Amino acid sequence: MVATRRPALLACAAAACLILVVVAPGAAADTQQFQIFPALRNAFFSSYVAARSSPAPKAQAGSTAAASAGGEKGCVKVETRDLTKAEGQSTFLKFFGNEPHHVGVSGDVLAAGGLFSFKSGEIFTGGAKKAAATPDIYLFNISKANAASPKYIDSVFGKKGAVTDSFLPFGTENGQPKFLASFMGDRKGLSPGKLAEVAYVNERDKWEVVAEHEGGVDGAADPSFTPHGFDRNGPNGSLIVTADYVTADTVFAPSKAFKWGTTVRVWNLTTKQVIARWDLATLPGIKETPQGLMSVRWTGGCGSDLGCKVLRTTGGCGSYLGWKNDTFWFSSGTGHLYLIDASKRAADGIESAIKEVYTLAPEPVYGSCVFSGRFANNTRLLVTSLALNEVRLVDTTDPTSIKTIQIYELPKGASGTPQPHVVVIDANATLAAVTTYYVEQPTGKGLWTKQASKELLLFSIAADKNSFAPIKTVNFNDAFEKATCGISAARGRFARPHGAVFVSK
Image 1 (tube, one colour):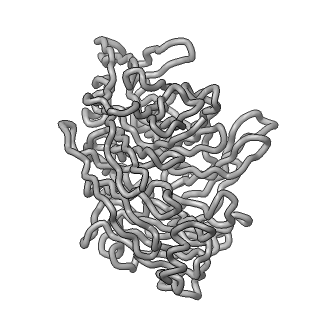
Image 2 (cartoon, one colour):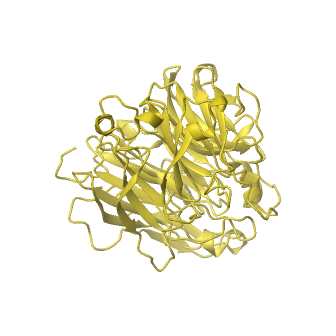
Image 3 (cartoon, one colour):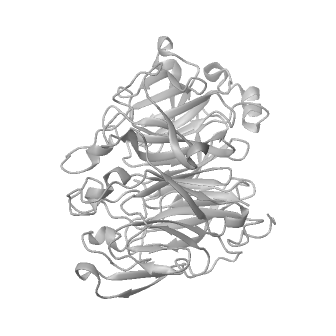
């Protein structure tokens, strides 16, 4: 990448491309041309967007859509054209009701999860299950030849697990990339969920969930297991930490209250079993009003990183961590960030294993709290707060005492408060992207109904990694006209960006 230019999207051979997963009501396409499928309620697609070279354009990048009256039951047909004004391309799939969520990349394969795929047949057909559930995972080829227009590979159902959230690369199998995926629930959205392995199976020439693992200690089932974010202690690390969020079925009507998760688990990747389980339900900031646990991020270990050199000099956390490579941060929905020492076991006590290291505000802040990847030699993170409508740059030089460097409050627009959620950075930590959509359920169908603005915000990160600044906003609020019957106004007209990842080809 040329240092003085922002990456151009379609020149993916030498640039970082940003891959999004969003929801597009009533649209689909084959390999030849865009076609109209008015009966498809929420077609699944990935779109690519990248920052222009500076100076940034004054006008926001939007989209155009052509609509014509008529269609099944009087629905308006929608044909989507040029979603981001020629800055990207889209790949549509003929599936609906998935609620596309987080994404992950392993080699040349992108995996995207359908959070509500297990429920899709009944959510979008008036409550009666008139259509089968759609797949839980979708796979795309994003090799150099396909990076500007990803090619659909396959879709995958869980065995007993569903409610797909996050992905991690997990080596290779049969010559193809492999993933770990968190399933927050079972096929009905109930707990327990599963930790799944997703791989290509030669003899059947297809991708499958090849294994699902229970969340109890030593391989036992645990009814509280609802895994959301998770991370591994390095590409070849032997440990992962998972964080429980919510029992998925409790977010749907007729439920009146969420059943939040409060547990983090340490896994041995050799045995694929939980070796330590910590319930945070009694900790301050969670016990008052739990809101689930969200992101997990490995601290980066010690090695030769700058942060470790500083701490060895200052002695800032040697007594707590002993500076081993098995420490992770995780966040709660109440705005608290914690550090977990994954070497600790039940006999050591929760006080020796988990420490609060940062809070967004003096009082609990309700709403998601998500981390970017580490950068600046493991001394920086970007953190989003949905409730505060903020993106923060924090100093993690001392991982036991995180400090605020900068707070950026997202501007409120005509379409509502943005509510930032996912935040990602490119490989060189020069660009960051934030998506401002979380979840919206159809009116009367669930508990997540708060309307928010739907945008992708792109930021430049300063060379010294001590500040970041907005450079572009891509507006998805009016990317599609209100198009289909049976969907609330809050849901029907919007494309809803969620998962995102930068890739370089």
